[in-house]
Image 1 (cartoon, rainbow over the protein chains, first blue to last red):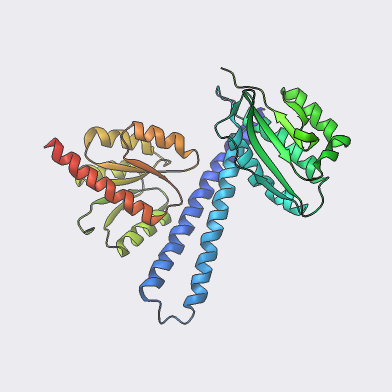
Image 2: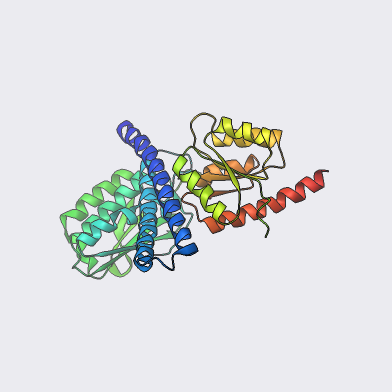
Length: 208
Length: 132
């Protein structure tokens, strides 16, 4: 826990620095764009130049998203009296696991669900439990599948639902046993989804 | 919109970022002074009161929120736009509580910044008139 908080502090500081770097790149490329718009008609490579500036802008956006997700991770081990916002934790997690899923040729997305639902767990605990479930699914789903996560409310509890075609086989694998043990240790209820499809993680309710 | 008579002060310790932003504003006919820390910001405001200060929250020395507090005490008509980083909601809300006009997250969209500047200047003029 102390290790995680220490690493989080260092990482959070580095993400602020990354943000300043990205902001400077955006302003510099914005200035080039301004100057090109003011007198670039005679510039032979104007179109190629504009394309380069578009790429820079896209990459800054990409860097920003990653930097925000890393910043969220950096603070995720911290315990707060209000617990974790489940949707925020899953947004950071799906963003960061996107590349891992892509390597398995599985699409990973967070469906629009309920926002503002909270749990007594720390953000890192929500992320770890859901990441275990996602990793187990990635080892099972055929290439080309789409794995969806959704946050819902059931009986006053925040519930994370994972669903994908063919996912029901997960419960027959050793990964399910590991996931069950992890879920139990965190007070998370683990069950198959409606109709036996997917998995549902019912998170402990926030402390009133 | 006549921007030539706008009085803007930009404050950030990221030299390249803030000087480039000033250059881009200048290309749009918006003059802006630039300083790189909180102490210099307070001196610049005391010497020649701007209408709007664009102020970074995270700076070495006097922090942005402290500069904001001091400016709102000494020059209440000056409107402050905060530049925040990650965790912007917390800093931004705290800044609004301390009297900031608004806040924006880096990297900036220059058109949005200019819109906010215009709206802050309008508000500053109205509040100065009401205070006369």
